[in-house]
Length: 116
Image 1 (cartoon, helix red, strand yellow):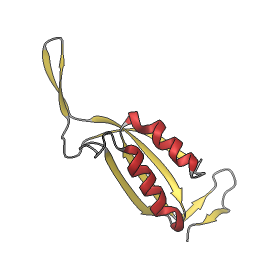
Image 2 (tube, helix red, strand yellow):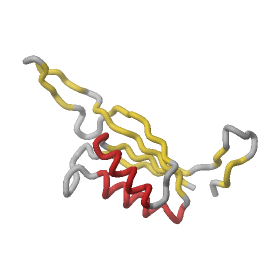
Image 3 (cartoon, one colour):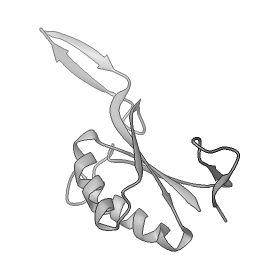
Image 4 (tube, one colour):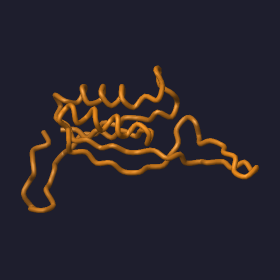
């Protein structure tokens, strides 16, 4: 198994979530996130003063997937997280990590499912 972590624009969350639901992937985790990549933040004007906003608001979407679902999930997230027809700097990143084990907190120490 793998965990797919997509850091996306908050405005694209509902689109990505709905697309994942169409794949019958209802079990997702969503967290607020802040950060920057190549854009290194941005400047904003407030009451005539310019402020540097170093950390930009993002959303982290985490999905646990089987190996045979991985490419489809990455494709669906990639297509639905774009903010323009060709994408923009700041649209986000997708990280894929291996999962060694999943344990259900409600009934330890039983293993929830094999991650292999």
